[in-house]
Length: 345
Image (cartoon, rainbow, N blue to C red; front, top):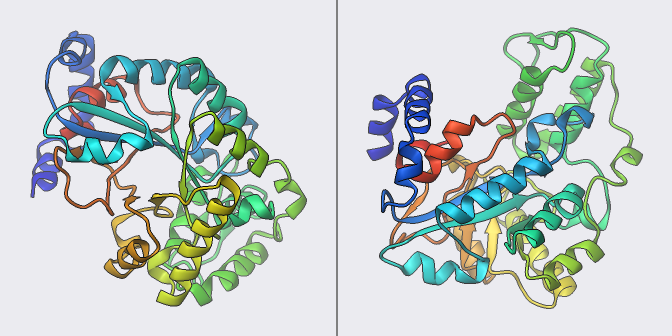
């Protein structure tokens, strides 16, 4: 009910206007030192670097290295920047402003660009790892979709069994078409996904993405172990990054337990935290949560925005909000002072 009310009172355009007013009036600077909110704000990153240098999905970039450092220092001045070890205490607390930084998917720039910044700032983050991509470097479905659409030999994909209307690719970087093709994948059942990717490869004329291009895309286990020894946190993100709600219970168990066991083997301790792949509310179920509990996970993070109020009850649905490369400064500043309004994705 509260989220619906906030959306009615502050639709996207009005939220931008309000954020600009708060920022340019100096109100955000004042609110940063007041108890304007209490609880836990979890911020989610994927990649650090220059998206223009990427031939895959540029939408995954959250910040340049320079801006990431500015953001980390801003977080430290705005709230208590916590570690994964603080989670239980913070979730039980009845007051205080707390921020947790998380990263998804284990991209190599997390080690090469984010890790040095975190060390320089004496900060930590929680990294969610899909283990099979570390064991056998290859493309995840979203990266391959982005590559196929970006390398399309056509400007339009006709309507077919996958798309109700033609998919317009156009010229330049087809960000909108990539987004549409990725969202279509989200809705597929497990036994449809390979057919979809093969069909897209044929329809675009690009073929399937050469696996050799993924050679340096992800971190290595040696990099992850170095980061772990430097007090960075690590959590599960499944083995192969499927949409959990779209696969059977037995497959969910294989993905969740297999990931936990591999991380425990490589890091010497089983993870207690889990990040739902993609993480929208309909992409995991009560059955998923039960499997996580049975596997020994205590905390699980979704990805549809908002923040945790004090004494958040559902530790298997801790909300996160995304940090995007194009996120306006005023929105970020306002998110840190009034997350009740500005933490919704």
